[in-house]
Length: 108
Image (cartoon, rainbow, N blue to C red; front, side, top):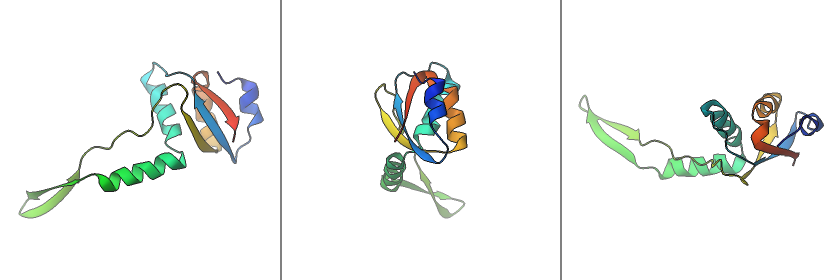
């Protein structure tokens, strides 16, 4: 669990290591935590790779070919022990404060 001392030690503009200690039960908190973890560079690279690998479903629509992709695969797992490194912007620190009971935060 992150304390106020941990959050106050971190300044905006530095990388932050986020370690997930538990999964929130509230849907809004899960969504916030997922959005925070999606800012990790390795997650973004994997998401781009999966996007290119997803097949395009071509079909006729109004006499023309229309391409559509299937839904994206979730890359972020909210399992306890998962680590993500994100840039510590002011917005990131504010969002981390709302889910601080489920993460450990350390400067990277």
